[in-house]
Image 1 (spheres, rainbow, N blue to C red):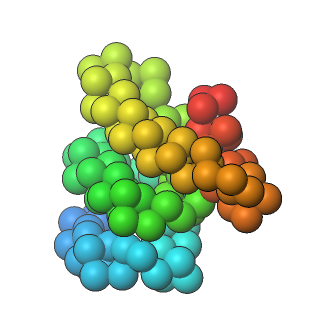
Image 2 (cartoon, rainbow, N blue to C red; image 1 turned 30 degrees about the vertical axis):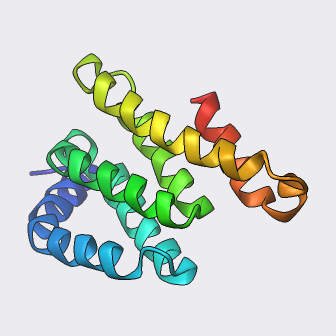
Length: 136
């Protein structure tokens, strides 16, 4: 008999195969819409937390989608989910190059946004999530 966490991970893993194409299409279509992306990032964050290493098969495509969306519109929820990715997978040395690429792309865009006059006052959410990501 599976424990509660294991059962949740199995349920998420079984659902993710069908859910991933929908999430990927939603990110492509609504990647600049803050309310949609916040909800989507919460779903994916829950999946990462529940699935653990089983999310690894979706990590590359999801990280690419996060970067692409953030380049179009720098939303703090994308940095938040990137922080979850780093927290969950950052110790895996085989993923280090991919995670570093993701971080470099996010950092370049975030620094461009935050270096504008008044940006820290106008975009405190991006500043906060960016520094949280860096602390991981």
